[in-house]
Each structure stands twice: as structure tokens, then as C-alpha cells.
Amino acid sequence: MTQGRRRLIAFAACALLAALVATLLPVDIPFLPKTGAPGWTFHEEPTIRVLLGDLAPGASADLGGVAGTPGTRFPTPTRVILEFGRDGSVRANGSGVTLPLVLQGGPDGIGYSGRRYSGDFVVDKDKPDRVVVLNRVPIERYVEGVVLSEMPPNFPEEALKAQAVASRSYAAWKIATCRSLSWDVADTQRSQVYRGNPELPKLAARMVRATRGQVLASGKRPLEAVFSSTCGGSTRSAEEAFGDAAPDPLRGVVCRACDGTTFSTWRCETDRRTVGKVLGVGTVTAFSNPVRHPSDRLRSIDVLGDKGARKTVSGSALQSALGSKALSTWFTSIDVRGRVVVAEGRGFGHGVGMCQVGAGTLARRGADAGSILATYYPGASVAPLWPNP
Ligand SMILES: [Zn+2]
Image (cartoon, rainbow, N blue to C red; front, side, top):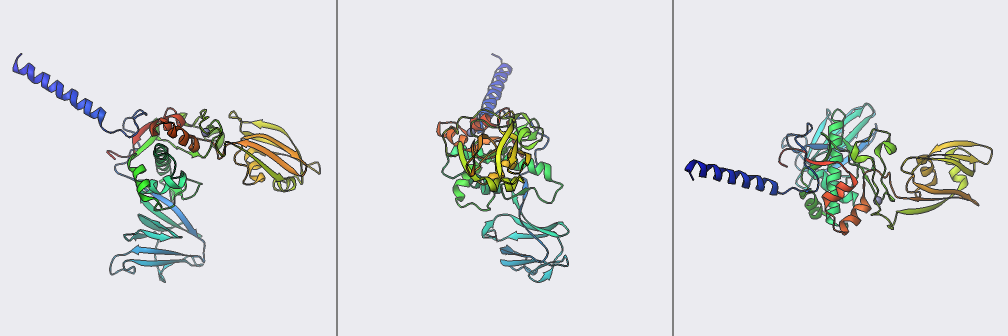
């Protein structure tokens, strides 16, 4: 064998080894195909702006543990009382400030409304008569504050990892679509629940680190990876639930993994006068003409009242009229019996995306985070949100 040929073989062996090592490098979500370089990839870990609260004219807010630059009006660390005057002015510890006001946290973060937060606080006006208090925080810290707020900490770790990826994906989608607005997400179920620094910081950090920077993608876009508690047997399409065109991973799947769990079926009884009053028909006497979505959830139904009133209401209007024990719009029966409206149904929540209780069951049966995500977001791929997270 010539030396040149030997060199060629050695080179080829090295290249093969390099390729093997490349495929063996840790891939956090091995089940899902990796996408190429999506157009929305950030240059570095992005921050997210979370709406924590707002002030109307005449209101004030109390922030503790704010770090300041020596020599400025905020010595380190300090408490800052914000006041939004009826004349539209904003004062911090009695002195007028111009907005946006950025407040940096001390070593323990910033305290606000009984919780502590990492990152900065930004105080700004998003309307002439509204001052908003935002937490501007790196996305990984944000996901640490979401994962155990959205899923019980005693769930299996692979389900918690799937939750971390879904929550990060949803946040990435919001960042990508809300950049022109004053803030990206609310800290409630309106977006996803975020309670600042988690009560179990080690567990939260471990679940987030194990999936660091990984998001679900649909085509070249981050996936709006919504989720809900218990689907009741099948998830539904985002289009059906929210009216927006749904990407393939949000078209709905059969679940069954939440069968037999606490909220997979439910029953509620509500006074028929109360229901009729909310729906504007007097006292309810009967229901008729139910129209169902393709997923079997209730689209609309006619409600008849005692004085001849008749009204077509949406499934969600009926759900809210029945009160908090009606857990979804998946009604399997609805009747008037005596003085009450008796409703039975399936599932808890809007039913789009990952079924969290089902994810817990799949993890207990041995599924990893990747296969849980592939089950509930079929066709999604996984991609890093920024290079080499
Ligand atoms: Zn389910």
C-alpha cells in the first residue's frame, strides 16, 4: 500500500469516526428529526418579557431587592415603590422617572407580589392609562419558572422534560410573533403559568438543563406548542378550538392515555335558573339541536327558556354558564332534571396539543420525552433555539 493510499484510508477512517461521534453527541430529544437551520434561530439565548402586573392611574406597586448603581437614586439593594399618578406621571421612591424604567435584581432577584424573580424588571406604559410591570428574563430561567407551575412536580421526569420543551416552544413562538408589542407573554393561563423562581429549584433546573434550548418546530417556524390538562380521549385541532389555521402538529390525535384518570369524565349539576340567567333566557326548560365539531366537542346548542325564549349559544358559553365544575366543551349529555341542569362530559381544558395527564401516563409506561412529544405533536421536529445551546 502506498503512503498516499494509507493516508487516504486514515483520513477516511477519521472522517467516519468524526461522523459517528457527531451522531453520538447528546441529542436531547432523540426521537424527533432535527431540522436544518430555521430562519428564526436566535444568535444567542433570547430573553422573554413577561407581564406580571399593571397599574391604573392612582395605583402603586412595591418591588423589593432591586439592585442599583451606586450614586443613582437606587442604592444597592433597595425597595422601590412605584406610583402611577392620576396626571400620568410615574414616580419611583417619590422621584419622577422617564419610561421605560429598567430595574436590575440583586443577588436574590426582585421580589414582587410575594414571589421572587430573576432577570430585570421593566416598567413601561403600553397604553396612556396603563403602566405595566414586566419581568425580562432569559428564556431558560423563564422555563424553570413555568415547568413546575404547569405540571405537578411528582410527575415522571420524562413528562416534565416534555413539558419543558412544549413550554419553551410556546414561549419561542410568542417571542417570534410578539416582538413589536410591549410584552411577549402573560404570567397566567392566558399564556402559560409562570411563578418566577421555582419552589423546587433543583428539579426545575434539571428538567430545563436536560432539554436546554430545544424547541419544537413546524417547518421553519417554532411551534405554538399549546397543551392542556386532560384531553378526555382525543385532542382537537387548534383550528377547531381557536379558529386559526392549524399547523400539522396541532391537528389533533387519539390519546387514551388519560382514560380513567380524575378528569377524563365529569358530571355537574347547576341550578337551571342560574344557567338561564347567565345565558339570557330566563329559567332553562330544555336544550335542543346540538351541533358538534369534528372532534365531538360541542360547537353550539339551542337553549329554551320558560317564557318562550330560545337562543343558540356556543359550547364555551354553555360551559361557563354551568360554572367551574363543567371542565370542557366536550359534553356527552345535557338535560334538565327537576330544578337542575345535569351535564356530563369528557376532559379538562381546551384539548389542543399535549394532554398533560396522558403525558404522565406515557412516561410511567416507559416513554421518553421525545416520544411523548411525537405522540402529541405529530410531524413536529426539534431544533435549537440558538446555535449550540
Ligand atoms: Zn388525553
